[in-house]
Image (tube, rainbow, N blue to C red):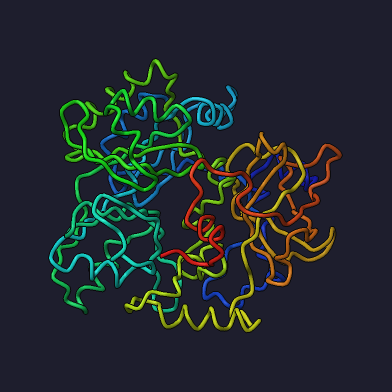
Length: 453
């Protein structure tokens, strides 16, 4: 049967998938496993998930709150939608985030505890930043690299006590890495996941809600500061952190398997007067803030110098750590004008229809319309404030300069009004929008340095 290809791409997902082919014109010769650049579109299957995937203590509460879709993250169900598309979808959730306050089930940030006399020395050996400069009841955004400098995980690191740290994970099996490292090194520490599950409280009214829950002391928590407290009589750790550029907090519930319902409903009740909505993690806002998503924007083959994380490699850390030698080599090569990688992350503004949901593929980037692709988009979304689509993307190193004009190849569902699927794009600064709390990169830049302790 003859099929009009463009119409088939919309109406027949199997044919669309069948027509997808990998492109070789994007130079990925520095990767062992290239990013799959086939444009196969939506996945027209129901994902079979059994007890192999863990339900967090908040999972059933998320379903009760309206969760209708989920992904798998750290081998757990991860809610990714509460408002259905026909009711406005993720952009309705966005409105609650930027105008009111929201609660997210982020138990997937599985907490890995490192505890013992050598906890500081061990943590200092596995992260690039200086763990000795993290005081008890403070935290930092950190990265852990392998010996080749590839990023294994980019967690929030909480220092609960002099001898106790929690890694609040992004999407990779960090516990296995930490245990493996210590088999060889023999630090005097215990390493294990603990029964702690966080929720994020994000949005401009988050501070008011947290004051209702914990009292006026919440107002004194600095950015990446911690506070011990209780919700419904159960012990928690509160941090002023989050996956957005908005004001926000996380509440880490101890013994979460037993007390999840008490925390969830207490927050819901307190949130009523603040117009609280339960939503999925807000990738539209994190992209605008320049926050990365492990597995989507970065992985174990990505060097921090490729993805706006060079500031995570301090120039003044004397102690040895995994990856230090290679990362210093890469920095020297980069400063000599000979980077050992082909692609580098940039911010893009681009045209087409408003991107209002997750992308199914890494959309391709060309220098000009009709030319072979040279790069790819990792995280696109529409910004209502900027009134344009924005994205994090990888392009050849020589195309990284602000103002460089490019072309993004969109899937047919996001074609421009004239039907074109090749739309103009421009390299722009990241972050796209300022955050309530500037991150360490932005603070370092303001000081005139290119790294954070």
